Image 1: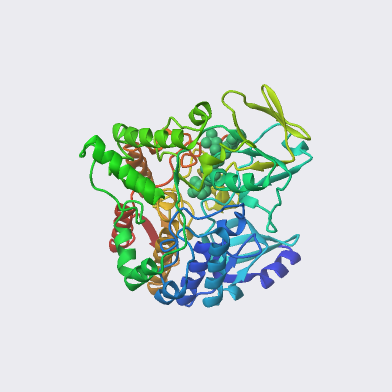
Image 2 (image 1 turned 135 degrees about the vertical axis):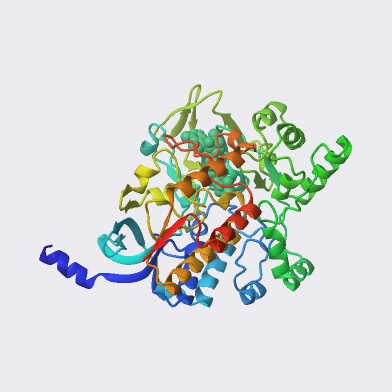
Length: 541
Ligand code: NA7
């Protein structure tokens, strides 16, 4: 070893745990590690907390889970004192909440910002992770016994490979990295590529400012109305009077959220009753539409009844029948994430808003001033890429993670493999928060994050108590779990679309269904693993 390295070793900071990311997962992980009396440092590429809510500042960015549920529950004082203003919180309000939590629990001193974790290499002796950080043009290394990837499921923007995009002379934005100061679209001709949730939330607001909005659609999406509104104080008081019971009830629901889950099949009722149920849910708004009947996510014929209902609604919201047809999906409802909108379809009735169906006329290239399709040159001043994320694995894959037997990217080349979405065989003392194979994006993310953080913290606490230094998922347990994740997915409609749940939106990404469907059985499994002395993991000292 040379002198420089020796010097670096002497100066290298050491922690019990390094946490990657200062979103809701990283912040709570830090809090729990501190309660264990451990030293921990959170590294975050951005210059503030909030994770996906730090970056996604596009117009209209909002959560699609009701505010009263999309919040931490680990502290009753916190959930009692915090006042949400609307049914669905806006990005600025969620970011304010994240900052409030960081203040309230004094998290700032142990979080370092503007710092990207580049690599993590396991050193067999002494059994620690060497973590490489990039910070203000310099590289630094720290060491930790544990690494927790709190990197988020929707944190790496998916950049489309469209010829000439880099030659565009106008303004180019991705919804997932929207400028902090906002963008004034007054007098601008805007081209929006993509029609997922980010596009559906932002298009009506962009159309309110811009001279023209052309929407380039590859696949239409189903969207239900949000019916967002200020929160009713009586409703808030009611939830707060029984917050912990309410949270506990939600853990028993399939998506871990209060979707007023029905246990009935869509065919247990008459046609008129079914329509009445859909009408009721449509009128109330939100993702609870999907839980109108228990078999909507599993049975094609049941799902077809929901499809027919929404198709009729789209036809009723869009004046031009040809345009309505183009905006109408042919896929099962929910197999791509259902969107929640305010006036999305109606926006297409405005004379300055138009749709370009990329199935009819694909984009051929972008020039300095236009998006060119097979039959037309669309001159624009601004291009908005609402093209989504390299979901669930993107952020972890960007880090060069090296275990004793090789890299994580090599291991995951054919698709991500993890036990319970919490850990992956061959990578000791490395934890994932809401990783692939956990309910994550098919659940209410915030409670799922808390459940994972608590599981990881309890596990590390157990190791401390029993003087164990190493934990690693067993390959066999991991294989069995992944087989189970797929078995469950295959009983459902979810693998039937080219969704980001499958990695299908990113060119070259392996198609593997990543989230686990079913919050209650997942919780049971996690608890059972612990009750059996961390079944499926090897613990050693
Ligand atoms: P999504 O839901 O992944 O939507 C991305 C959209 O961009 C979708 O319509 C894609 O079409 C489209 N897309 C992606 N690449 C291209 C290219 N190359 N050309 C044309 N169109 C393209 O991301 P969002 O940000 O809207 O939402 C992500 C989640 O955030 C959302 O589900 C909520 O949970 C919050 P495709 O469907 O792939 O044909």
